[in-house]
Length: 395
Ligand code: LMR
Image (cartoon, rainbow, N blue to C red; front, side, top):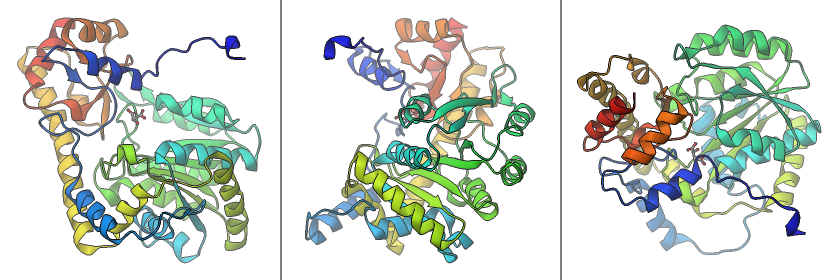
């Protein structure tokens, strides 16, 4: 049976991590996988997480099965974080399940949508997160793209995006990034969200929003603008969210999939299908990450501590953007890289060729995805000069 298989290349993002770890160059820089790093290159465990884990260690009293929905308190707190005091919560039209990470949420959401309409088409931005396509295809959806990032002008192809989406109809799904677009860092502004939402309503396609970075762009509420506006205006939508980045819980694998239906009755029916999807993939989600998040979000003190720690991560990433732009200038680079400072979240494209990306890796031990996507959190005061110098050399 196994003899029929051909070897697949390493994952374009995760493969870099393995290479970086075995590189012995003391100057190596990891701008590959999207994880937050502090000034010393460490991905720290947040203090609020440590406190919540301590509380859990003392208070947990059973390891019995949790059920396909996961923890009701986590689901409730996550819905409030995402939607705030939104009418979909008041109207009892949202159902959330805890999932193994944001990827689990995307897969559950995709399988749910495939149950609604087998073989449906999902439209994703060009470009999008490298794993979206494979993940949606694995769920049986057909993947098509809409124009999004203009590599030439480092801007959004908004008009082209809208004219492609204008031809998308009721039976299709459109995937949108809530904030901190991965890989481009190029987000829709509020006015553009309003236009996308109006088109969604008019054409009737189903919005599927991926919110992997709430709080990493402008703030928790600001980053949820598009999600809340969409929920205000459409009858049905699906949302995948992640606690990997904003709570720093990467390896705990905790995220959430939320469905919104047009009324309580149809939402309840849809929820039964969602739970069946979960049961048939992994039966029930892991509990530990959810317990940490619900402990933080339901305590005034820990919640405030998390807001503060999240702001530190967000501000450091934003500061790194400016730092790189300044250092490139200081190295006498003529090309205009100021766009890096206007983009949001963990990533930006540096805008160099795949050959130059390869040179940076081979000759300077600087690791980024072949598309020149950089994980901005890997930049630090201590390495930015070397980084800018190396970029200047390969240009
Ligand atoms: C990334 O895009 O680097 C992150 O979302 C991590 C991943 O799983 O790819």
